[in-house]
Image (cartoon, rainbow, N blue to C red):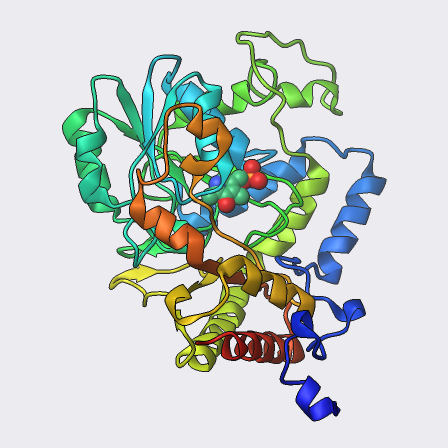
Length: 404
Ligand SMILES: *Cc1c(COP(=O)(O)O)cnc(C)c1O
């Protein structure tokens, strides 16, 4: 067969791949510029590589960017979620309401406190928790609601906050996808609730591993800071600094969740570029929407009025009834074209750990529907013109080929 024909056949079916193996697009591969690298090297040479002045600077920068009253850096968003619940007093026997359309860390962090994650189904269009279904899930044991701003799309926070007020619950926001998102003119992270961000490798900005809690409440912020560093008295990280040795007190059975200055070195140069990178992702987003509008897929819903979507995840919902192959086959086909895709997410309640808690297929039909059909495409600010073109070519080729 000649190349012209082979180019129209997916690599998985014997055709030519859009990209060769050496040029594989790794899903979520982050953008790291020279200034980040320089800062990391400087920090390594400085003699102070653990928690220190650069972490403090990064906290202040996040605080200013979000217009939040307090920000505490930790080594992950998982740690941020865990400590936010402990600082609230959530414990064994309690229940926390959340969405099953999320990463395992959300529900795991609830389970770590001994509390039970109580899932509530999503809205298919927004893929966020359906706030009108929350009330039915509230019991005597409910202590908190943990909404996730899925893909960077803000949840209906007024409705959720009002419900929480009515029942005396705390809201802890999982904003792992949502750095830069806005709700009614305010940045997510400045609405007053404890809000947890992630700087994991694939997120909008990265410190390799890293997380942050923002909150209105200074006492709460201090509790998190103490619990995140062995339960030692505040500012114990300075105990070996050039200010001279300081005694400290261990008041709680704390954790080792602190961020290091090496990590913060990345953060302090990534954060100032967040809006510029959002523009790059928005351009890619719009190109995808335009390129895929006639394929058998549902495009991401438009932004809700008076909100800003952080555009962390671009996921297509495959119209599987119009395809002769399922999502996993399409995902694999893209992989064979040299494009790394993702699944955000298989509904959490279907994982063995949560099935053992009594959850079953059929419990959350909307989440399961999305979970079976969703396909995430690369959206990193690192992607260049050719990358985006190739992703579009590969998706178009594969979906056309497998259309009924
Ligand atoms: C990435 C992610 C987390 C966990 O973040 P880490 O910083 O890796 O601990 C939590 N929730 C959601 C929704 C995520 O996507």
